[in-house]
Length: 337
Image (cartoon, rainbow, N blue to C red; front, side):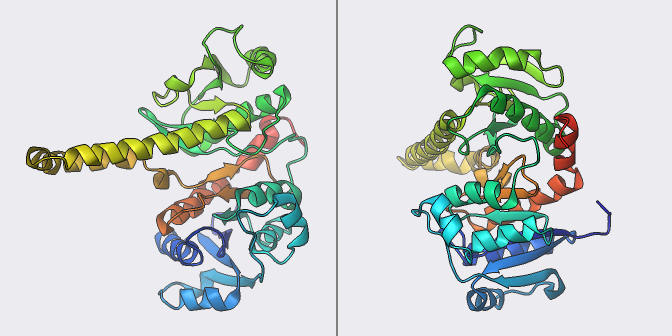
């Protein structure tokens, strides 16, 4: 990419529980933080203009494309993508497909984003399935969980491609050289696992272009046991949701304990700076959204309840993806045309 060329990012202004406020606020904050980007907000023009009026921003780097429909969280994704041609998700993704934009960010329907990514934006030729791959916090930093929701009935060949794409992402975006790749299993031994894991394990072992270290049990994921965590979407989604729920429950219990007596409240004041720093490292908003890898353009799915901070982070993560030419690296590494 040419250095002076702006990275063109489409933001679904109607997507998420906090739309249009959070997507637009996040977009404005991202513009203020980085001058390499220009943003197209897709949605109902009057709603977008009313929200934008609250902020000061570089109007030369903001565009609005009208879309009258919104795909709800409870709508069947395939049917919605096919029927709601004037929805913010479909209109936004078509801008990427036509080459009028580089990236698409949405906190809207996960199903519609996944289906739209594959049907509207389209997969890179040779990519069998596009996995959803969020960064999850660990005691050592972050790991990439791939796949966490896009391909429930994956085959072994899909998982091999996931491992390769995940390695490229971690090395070039996160900066981890020779990232450790592991497949989720119920034990460390090679002979353990279901049919899919047993079939995939030897294929990963034969790959000379990834650093495959074997199986990883779920309990070792938060400890940073591997950099790329490979699994099919059913297992990945269970891991992700347990991560989110357990983190929330532990935080609630810690706060409850710290507020239980005068002595604990005094102690809470003393440990507050260190606790805040620790909790920030495990804050999902620090890591942006989950990229859908293997598409012709980048689609980033932010959490449905995303605040403006999470939307801003999701937008900014598109910059390194474009600058590092991740799609070109995927084509080259997987020897795709």
